[in-house]
Amino acid sequence: MVRTEKNYFSVLVKHNTCRVDCTGIFASEETCFMRPRSLEFTVKIESLDLDENGWLINFRDIKNILRTMGKKIEGKVLVPAKCRYLSVGTTPSGVCLSKENMLYEFEKSSCEIMDTENCEVEYLAKYVCEEIVTKLTMQSLRDRNVTKVQIRCEELPQLKSGIYEVEIPYNT
Image (cartoon, rainbow, N blue to C red; front, side, top):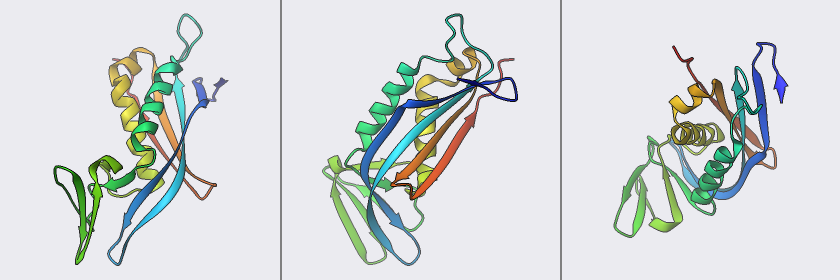
């Protein structure tokens, strides 16, 4: 644990990383392709102070959320539902992606449809960060004096990384 220059406590949760292997769908105006990848998500939390036990936050909660997210996307095809170059649809048993005259169909159980524009690491960091903030709830984070939740998504072996953070407004 480190006290930063702003008199905040900051913790990089090294033991609460999550590694997953999955395949991302990438589409642009010219092309559409799938790319396998290994990802690592790391959480960083900042808070104004510690609780009565000297804790910033119960990291078991974050660990459980990361594990759940990891299981949710491990081995799946990540489908960016908001990609402007793809049409995404579902059938009772599958997920259909179309781009101009190309059609891709996957078993529903092999896909994770994500509410993102693409599968780049920045968007995946945002996806996981928003999931953590939603599961822990904004009010719960405020009550614990958490000021920032940050997720770093790194494509291994150190190809790209993206960071997304949510500032938690103070209790008023």
